[in-house]
Amino acid sequence: MSQHLSDAPRSAAAPAAAAAGHRDWWRDAVIYQVYPRSFADGNGDGMGDLPGVTARLPYLRDLGVDAVWLSPFYASPQADAGYDVADYRAVDPMFGTLSDADDLVRTAHGLNLRVIVDLVPNHCSDQHEWFKQALREGPGSAMRDRFHFRPGKGAAGELPPNDWESIFGGPAWTRTTDPDGAPGEWYLHLFAPEQPDFNWDHPAVHDEFRSVLRFWLDLGADGFRIDVAHGLVKAAGLPDIGHAEQLSLLGSAPMPYFDQDGVHEIYRDWRRILDEYPGERIGVAEAWTPTLERAALYLRPDELHQAFNFEYLGTSWDSAELRRVIDRSLTVMGAVDAPATWVLSNHDVTRHTTRFANPPGLGTQLREAGDRELGLRRARAATLLMLALPGSAYLYQGEELGLPDVTDLPDEVRQDPSFFRAAGQDGFRDGCRVPIPWSGSEPPYGFGPDAGGPSWLPQPASWAGLSVEAQTGDPDSTLEMYRSALELRRSLPALGAGTEVVWLDAPDGVLAFRRDAASADGGEGFVCLVNLTAEPVTLTVPEGRALLSSAAGGAGTNSDLRGTGGVAVTIAADTTIWWAI
Ligand code: NOJ
Image (cartoon, protein in one colour):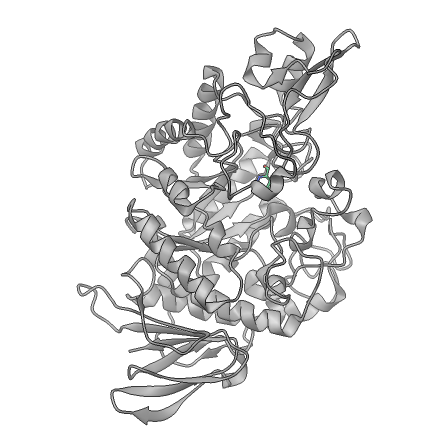
């Protein structure tokens, strides 16, 4: 489907050369999220692992990304797929060993790929040594101060200390049992009960995370994706919210457990540590804030480098909405001299192929497959739009294959804790976490070494045609479209960090913008044309040539109509065209 319409130079050496020694590399990096459970299984036990990732790094280098972000692989009982860490300095045996992590980082660096590890500082696992000790030592012990333990309310302490709700459903407090067997204090967990929140008012917590940062920086990590970066500091006194269904307020209203001003001192401290190391090590905030302006505060010059743009991820396939979010993101992030970032999918949301296959307004956790063909067409167009924007972009493993969410997983194979906490009404994150297909005609499609071998979530029979092997070399495939786009993004001076977006006149439902190469770089200018309507649209653009189309078999564009001062270009429905001027 994808049309590499130009004869723009294709250089296999470009990714390596571009990554090496590129200053401010993070300002326009394409960062690929590996979800280690589901990327590649090296030992055939049905669970992805670090040797599996290492063996596939050349694939990522050839895809043309700059960095890999790995979701957690620390020692963990896996109550929340590794976001419940029992030991921040150990690799879970299910993923391999510390020496495998070391190998992975060294191999990546040898391929000029950077490695970002996931840091989980808001909470740990209930199997973390500190928490186990806190439970053992009982109320009033020094170890309990490192968490949020409180007596309950009510005559016998039978009610939670406040009205906070867990993000995964139910109260954010669990009652403990004292060493003598009597009902005891409660502890705070914003997520699952197996994920007790740290008390960031305690200096030992600060010291511990400084040391954990150094541990991974010493091992060669190029940065950290910071889980729940907005949650570490809680409002003094842990005040009630006075409102049920708190999930509906998240990201839009101030909360006493999110986005408190005190978090910024932590990131200033961490920035000083990052800056001690050579090679521009970065911090990326997973911060859900009520406004983009609040998100930008995490990116002030002495804090973190990037934050995920969840407002962009949540925007439906609507030209006016997208234009508004793009403009606001560039303005607000530009004001603190931070790059805007763009993301369409990750391990917590329904893949964008499936989101765009469904009517807008359903949110980012879907159970409906929708119109798959429409979803894929829009997803491909959305990707080319995203990769044309100034700043840094995040890809989630498998999106380059156009994978849909698996919306019909049987309940008995699901593992997302929020599915169970919400009694099956919510928590469909397993659908985007199904192991990806690499090759062959039957599950696990090369995910593991053995034909017919296991995979921790079942893969659909329809995925044979979506494997890396099946798509490689097929110019119509989604994989080849991603490869072409990433290569063009490297070779065109107008793309990447570049300059700002200049909007061009366009009919309703169409986005058209120009990006100019910085004068020092010279080279061609660039126009991105996105038709978000269900009909073909013809518009006049500056004279030039088509570089790439998201549409099938050349149906994307017809540029043979010429007018004065420009070229009339016809763009198919739900299609993006990259155009050189
Ligand atoms: C955000 C992570 O992306 C998600 O997967 C996890 O469940 C929560 N944080 C809790 O750590």
